[in-house]
Structures are given as C-alpha cells and as structure tokens.
Length: 149
Image (cartoon, rainbow, N blue to C red; front, side, top):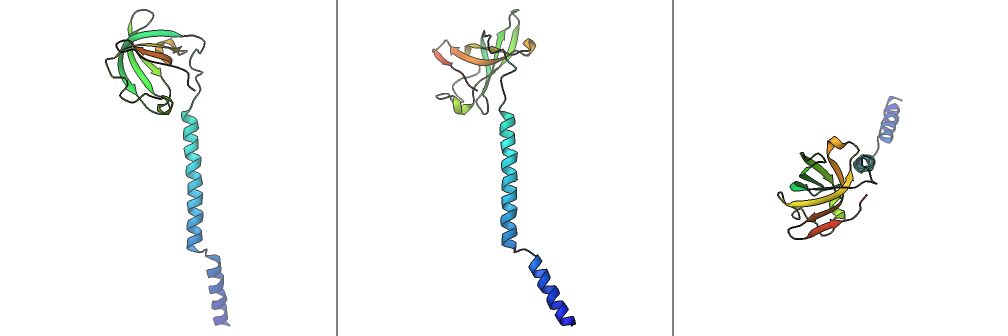
C-alpha cells in the first residue's frame, strides 16, 4: 500500500507540473501582451491635442534660429526673436513629426539661420510658444507651410 501511495503521489505531482515548454510559451505571450499595452499607452500619451494654442490666431516672429530638434512625435525649433514689446525672447516652436516632414532632414536648419515663422500662439503668452504654420529662410528662399496633427 505504501508503494502504491507513492506511485499515486508521483503521478499527481507530475500531472500538476506543466511542461516547461508550455509554461515558457505562456510567459512569452503574457509578457509580449503586457509590453504592447505599455508601449501603446506611451504612444497615446505622447500624442496630444493642440488645445494649448489659439488655433484661430496667427502671429509672426522673425529672428535667429537657436536649435532644431528633428524628432518624433513633434519636431521643435527654438528662435531668439522679439516679443510684441520688443524684448528678445527664446521662442519654442512646435512643428510636425520627423516622419511628416517630407524633404526635411536634421541638417535642413542650422543655428544662426535667420528665419521668419508664422504660427498659432500658446494660450500663456509668457511661455513664448507657437504651433508652426510656416517657416521661411530668406537667404536661400527655403520655406515650408502646412498643417499637422
């Protein structure tokens, strides 16, 4: 009887332990799905609305390009230009994603370029932010205009 008990006990234990290849597949599936959920949340968070700008108002700034960040989800240019009081400010201008800027590369704009930018101003004037609608570099006639989401 004792030998039979141990045989039954062994059978129960081996039946309740899953095959390691099945466990690995399930774990990979669970972690893969978890990773997809996390990454999709990051993408959704990164893409925001433009509620922080006045889309029905446009302003023009003219000044010197300080930096150009060609990236996703939105590219940015920073420009030293006067505000409506004539004081030089550093403007942060949000542009389209790198993938939406056909013909534009990270070398298209250089610090020191004189540019004229038209855009929708931010709702907080002290932030000196714009959503770009157009950019012109007078020295060679480079220009871009358009809309992006």
